[in-house]
Amino acid sequence: GQQLNQSPQSMFIQEGEDVSMNCTSSSIFNTWLWYKQEPGEGPVLLIALYKAGELTSNGRLTAQFGITRKDSFLNISASIPSDVGIYFCAGCLSGTYKYIFGTGTRLKVLA
Amino acid sequence: NAGVTQTPKFQVLKTGQSMTLQCAQDMNHNSMYWYRQDPGMGLRLIYYSASEGTTDKGEVPNGYNVSRLNKREFSLRLESAAPSQTSVYFCASRDLNTEAFFGQGTRLTVV
Image 1 (cartoon, chains in turn blue, purple):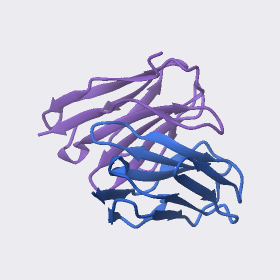
Image 2 (image 1 turned 180 degrees about the vertical axis):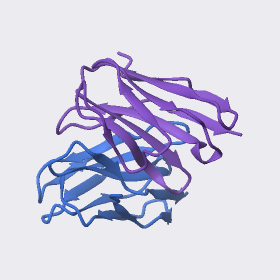
Image 3 (image 1 turned 45 degrees about the horizontal axis):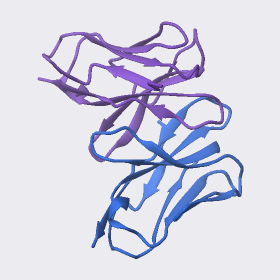
Image 4 (image 1 turned 90 degrees about the horizontal axis):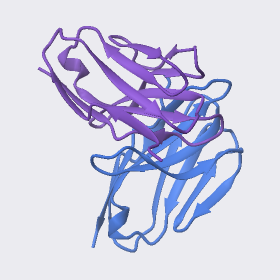
């Protein structure tokens, strides 16, 4: 089935460091979104991207919708302990209502 | 505003038993989704309903059926549960070009 390849799978970083993660696919997407999930909860939206090339920030988070519409990245600057969690990319395949998720990046921040 | 409500929150089934997971949204969204989440696998799309009256298979539909009862409700049925269906199930709803909103999840164990 369709898959979004997300990397890295996990990251252990020191508080204050910057973080970068990305998603790629062989298919074209018409939206890219980034979610964070904490234990026992459903995913919560961080940033939504709706146009190829779009670069959007939300506080310390910055994400971009790749120009080819097949990839996206998320950066977190100056990480803090509460950034711990699993980050997922998600997208809607072009021409469909099919909304699929990447495999996730597990982030741990060491104080 | 309740958002997306899933019931039950927890369930234990014996192999071969059947059950229906319920999902309701009060945001007047057209599209609804069912995902399963296994450790290290991210969220995988089981079935989705682009609009009332339509349903489509996702990435992992085998062993499941769905019903879009009306615009608010989208149920997921396991006719004969198997241990491989032990997972956390999430329902979500969205409209075109918007984020998805998730329920709190149903933790299902099949023994």
